[in-house]
Amino acid sequence: MYNSIDLPQLTICSENYTAPPWLLITGGRAPAARWLAQLPTPAKIYAADHGLDTCRTQNIIPDYILGDGDSAAESTWNWGKTLGVPLEEFPVAKDLTDTQLALAKMKAAPAIIITGAFGGRFDHLYSLMFSCASQQIPCILSDEQETLAFAKSGEEMTFHFKQHPHAISLLPFTATCTGVNIHNVRWPLNNATLTQNFPNAVSNELLPDQTKLTVSIKQGILGIYCHWQ
Image (cartoon, helix red, strand yellow):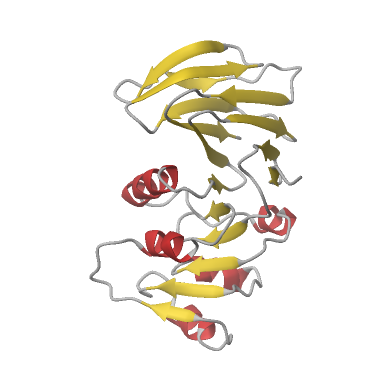
């Protein structure tokens, strides 16, 4: 039974992962070419606006392109129109970000890996994190430097690290997260309550002799953030 998502630096296991994920490439910091090449082949690839520049640079033909075209290079946007794949253009003056529009188009995905999420504008990252936290579809934001996954009420997630992370933080995406457990770290938690208004489970450390991390939550939505130097 399929229950894991494989990334170049770690594998994340959850019973909520039921089939290979789709990939969304968006317009923040572009992932390293080597990292992106090491990703298992996704079932489908979506490119949101400036994410199309990453596709062109790294010789990736997406299955679907969308956005308002205000951040992708004009030559890249024109290149996208020659690929023979669906390309949906939106007005610049709109309520949703291009990435939010992409998430709405990807409702059939069993899970979504979003890359190009970090390193750009904080307001876009903030919007994306909370948009992903509220999705029914499991979402993971990732590149070679950072990964953010979400555990929801009653869920247990196991992280198998291929590269030892520099830091691990637990970020509440609901007002409270109760029954939080984390093991194999310097500061373990057992049935803890974490609050969104004063996040204090930040910059934990995986024990030096460990490659496995287990996180579970009884109630709420909890972000598990990993950082590599």
